[in-house]
Image 1: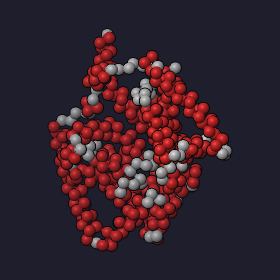
Image 2: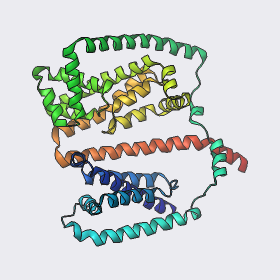
Image 3: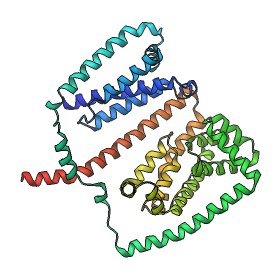
Image 4: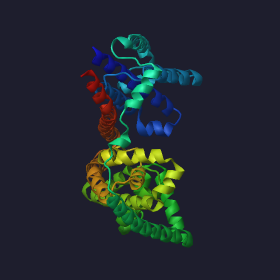
Length: 398
């Protein structure tokens, strides 16, 4: 019964999140047409179901009502309550007038709210509700993520610092040379600015036409474009991957995309090493950097895999973050190569073979797969942090 309650609550919360995202999409016609309401609802529903399967405990008991309230508030404020019916119609692929599903929508809305109100009202019967003081005590007993890291000897630390120094010198030299060429050469300056403008459109067809315009040099331009995207443009790399598949075929396109993405990731990693931890810790905080550091040490391979699978995540962010941690370059490079290879092959196949709704559906399935890995990592981190508290409690009971 406890599992069914959790599954229902998280599933309906996912649906509420889907309605909220779809409602926001109505403010941008281009985004709505590009993404599709049905796909957003499908992904949100799947995310909710996976949360319900992964967790027995309901931690945010008012989340469903908050999301629902935001949807209703936005719809009422804009005078477009009918959009909720339209979202429902598109999600269920119904070939009927919007007005004909109004009664069914209202009945479903009432039933879901009654059940969730009951779940929240009787929450204390199925799980322990902690007071603020009890939460503070539990938090103090929790095992910190930083306690899970492997301790290094002074010799190992000195060796790491020596390697970092050489890497920083090389990376800084590359940065200085690249910036010098960019500002001194008007042709290079204009070409790079134009390339960024094309990528910023988030239009696969525009990227395809741009690469094709270089004729026999198209592969070289694509390679450079992927590196530029990795270093300086916060834009998903899958745009270039899809374009490569359309131009060169999915097999050759996959090889080109994978190799160029590897080069871009390595460059981002070395640039981050050039900045150094001291500078980054001053810009952020030492505690935050230590948390990221340990997370990458323990879950780095999975983190890289997840971020590469998600089509809306810019991969350069992960590469920079990894470069600022204690993860070694070869650990990062191997994990990157293995992690991005399946996704590159899949995106290349999608870009070269599928179009329209089939392409969006396929990407949606990949997003769901990636989200399932995210939930798995979240659960692993949660279990690690609470392991010490459970062990302490077991010792007291004995």
